[in-house]
Amino acid sequence: MTKVLINEQLVDEQDAKVPYNDRGYVFGDGIYEYIRVYDNSVFTAKAHFERLLRSAKEIGLELKYNVEELSELIQELLSANGVINGGVYIQVTRGAAPRDHAFPTPSIETNIMAFTKSYDRPYKSLEEGINAITTEDIRWMRCDIKSLNLLGNVLAKEYAVKYNAQEAIQHRGDIVTEGSSSNVYAIKDGEIYTHPVNNYILNGITRMVIKSVADDKGIPFNEETFTLDFLKNSDEIIVSSTSIEVMPVVKLNGESVGEGKVGAITKSLQEGFNNYIDKHS
Image (cartoon, rainbow, N blue to C red; front, side, top):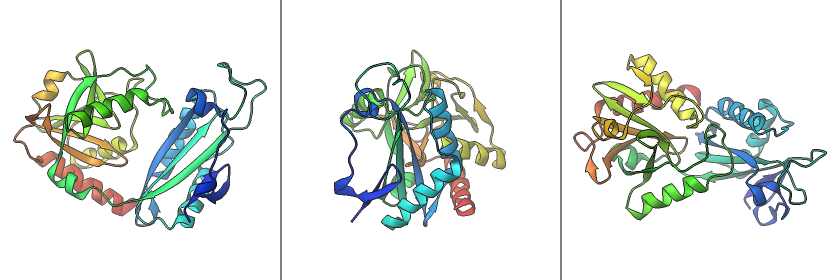
């Protein structure tokens, strides 16, 4: 029987319940992280939990756990479910209280929930690439917070699915921001370009690894804004996330990117990412 973590208790999946007036349910008042598991090892766990704590601080949520305690809870859950390769989702809400927009006074106990999923790496897509489509970024102005308010992301992803694409690359006006569930990189003349870390994007953990790999390989990594036109005329395009890793985009809006196949810089970054997994798992 699959186990789910509910406030430090491991319960059977069928018994995993939260209160109807939980603020995560009625307001989206909460935060989350999704962490990859490779060969029974939690990948970049410290960075994920540090980001969770940052998100909590940004929304004034008093989280009583530190990185080590969160790691222990998640490891217990993974062990109970026997996850070898897959991922774990963890979310924290401000808690259950009568519905009122303002924070409960006095503060209440947070609700924490986590579940696991077993699956393999997306080898076929990593080798062949995916299709993407562009769409206006309609999300709020604090995309650096990994909050539960994901309706804008959901609508963008559904737009991609509608046009037989696997990801939607978002833009505010003419400036490319990030994907519906990924960071975005344009590669031109051997250099990588990606939106700088600010309130318009989430500073992805995989993004951090890619930056480290690029630095090790001597590939210029430019954190600066770029336009839709620059993206459409780039030699290679990558999207990245915990789930899809270093994913090449070979078609954008139905048109081939570069030569329409996975490029040399992308392959080099994928190789470096694989080595990073081996070294840190």
